[in-house]
Length: 121
Image 1 (spheres, rainbow, N blue to C red):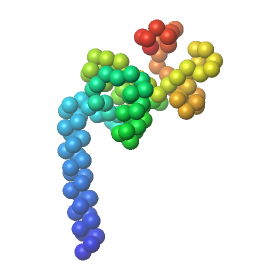
Image 2: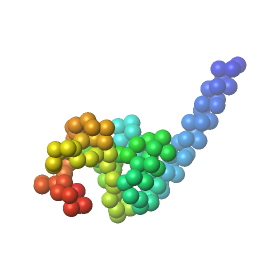
Image 3: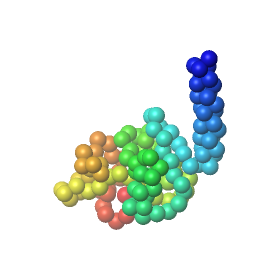
Image 4: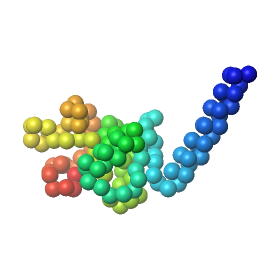
């Protein structure tokens, strides 16, 4: 009997999560790629505030690791007609970039001669 009750609760929770995800998708607040959920609150903020909000939500700032994840982030850029911060920083070697934890980038999709430091990367 207990197993059936647990299964019923799980089904109810999955249904509620599905409904909430549907609403967020319609509001262009979340999108998915490769099992990852990318989300936004749609508000403009500086880099440090963005990092803080991501952490408060239990996530981290977006770090595209392949074309599909890059497209997921681009979805928000286009939907909100704005820019997006990424979890990438310049290393100690000028013009070389890395993830915030210091690991080397394995994927980039920048225009030729970018990033140039002119804020249009």
